[in-house]
Amino acid sequence: MRQWLFLALAALVLLNGCSWIKSWGKDDDEDAPAQLVEFEPTLKVGKIWSTGIGSGLDQAGRQLWPAYSSGVVYAADYKGLIAAVDADSGRKLWEVKTKLPFTGGPGVSGGLLLMGTEDGEVYAFDATSGTQLWSATVTSEVLAAPAESDGIVVVRAIDGRVFGLDADTGRRVWIYDHSVPLLSLRGNSPPLLRAGVVFIGYDGGQVVALRLDDGTLMWEQTLVTTEGRTELERLSDIDGQLVFVASDLLVSSYKDRLASLAADSGRLLWFKDISSATGVAVERVNLAVSDRTGNVWLVDRRNGAEFWKNDQLLHRGLTRPAIYGSFVVVGDAEGYLHWINISDGLFAARAKVGGKGFSGPPLVVGQTLYVLTNKGQLVAFRAGAALK
Image 1 (tube, rainbow, N blue to C red):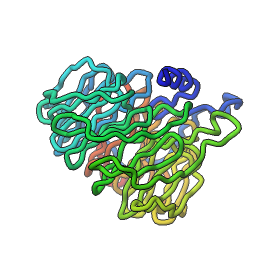
Image 2: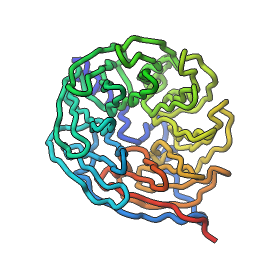
Image 3: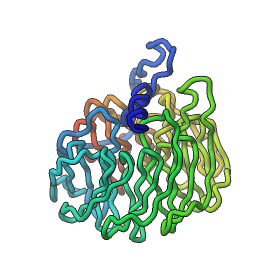
Image 4: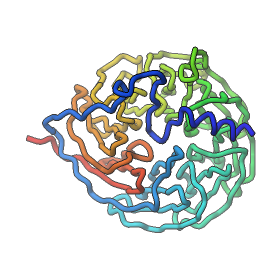
């Protein structure tokens, strides 16, 4: 019953993939996507290959993001197709049509390819062949990619429960239950597994740390509350990627909170009033985030000090950024990829990939950047030397 009510209410404020929510009561012109500014490119960007991945995504806000492991990119569509693609050439190594209603994944670890469905099922496939190994049932839809470490597969369901499953059989090892608000954005933060600890972001603005072996709660920290005069003001979701760096946990919330926590205790180290449901990207001291209105920020991950803010992509439905060498790369809902200089926040390059935007954030592996479009095209890019 709660799931049906959640879906009905979520339709009011649906965050579809990397889309944005229109603030209620505003004039349409205020939220119109910003026109792209002209600039002189300073970076060469080229597409090196493209391959089709089934039917892509529908309009249900599924989190089907490509994943990389050992020279292979894995991707899936919403009709149950999964594929393994050679990361260098774009050649398909295998493809399996399961007809399962995939909503979250793939997660790849330890030779397993893990997928979640809208029916609350988790499937494990052999990452080298696509052969199904086992399936398990959880209590509700799985939007975030399952993760695996030390023989435990961790699955977050949209009803707030987190499951630890045996990686060999799918047998339930433990379950952790946490309440979630009745009204929230459609999306879940993927479980982050580090050194025997599971970090989970929740729709009510909390972050929890669980023991990987038995699901015991180690600590809970509330970043923001669900207080507010309107439903929109009460949205506090932590739906984006959490990042672990050194001993710090970097987190963003839809309700004006970008923060760093001590990973061992949850103690708040610093925070900044930036609103983002897509999560953060971090490399060394650089933390990149795209906020809910379309600003792209680069801040110092050690203290939150602002390096720069680019405000020229407002209301363009931005993905979570990726850091590619000396550039921040972000995709928008019209299918453009934007390369922004880390040094000054200015545009360096732009590439049009396709309409309807992207299934999730860009994936950077070495010198290659991969994106999966909502139409089902998996595309690889490389950026070369600066233009003369």
